[in-house]
Length: 259
Ligand code: NAP
Image (cartoon, rainbow, N blue to C red):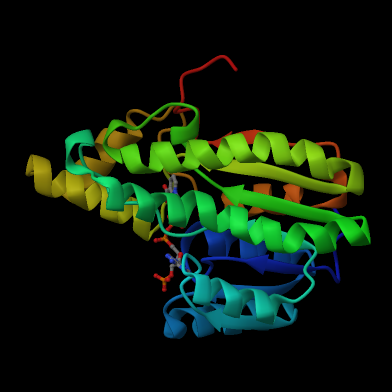
């Protein structure tokens, strides 16, 4: 399917690895020029070179912390007028409700709620002025069904979801859509680190930790970054203009719910 977005320009945050990289690759395959971001310059440059070599699109890189004011200013200056925004950042650490104080919540809210809101605030006016735009926020399945040890994530991402629910309906008349993609477990460094914590806590092997988790997923596997990227690229396509303010689970059926 031709996604109809060849020649558009996208900012994909936190995209040197994992889900962000999957989104960047799928957009590049559809002919979209990219602004990529991550903190570590080495992996970012490697990803940018691989994507440019594979798809021939323009790729600009900005090595910066997207959750800081200074980092965001750098990224936004390099991005200029973009048609597509994919927001993403690292997730908050796991723990227990009794572990967290105000500073932990402020960090989580900054990274996973206020950063995507600041990016939308900066970029939506341009999209609306041009009469076309796409925003995809990478959130989590924890928005639909809480993951107990990820309380910081549950809280921050649900806040973002509430913001998007209202804002998406305010910008839709200008041809701009905002939607959220909710990953269940995908095969990325983040999954390895979560499984590593289970290995440590329960004294089991990595294979056992993965097998335990596979058993909880009807698809009996983790998702791939390519599958995730393809869903993102479709939401950014010309075909998805009537999809507004939705929360789309990509979790292999793990969230046991009818709706
Ligand atoms: P990942 O494989 O660890 O990749 C994270 C990417 O984000 C890297 O490129 C990393 O590069 C960049 N990054 C992290 N913090 C950043 C920051 N402050 N500023 C700029 N770039 C940053 O993680 P992932 O699995 O793709 O996860 C992406 C998001 O989805 C996370 O919020 C995660 O919690 C959420 N999620 C993931 C899963 C899953 O199964 N993978 C499930 C549910 C939710 P640098 O480290 O160099 O900055």
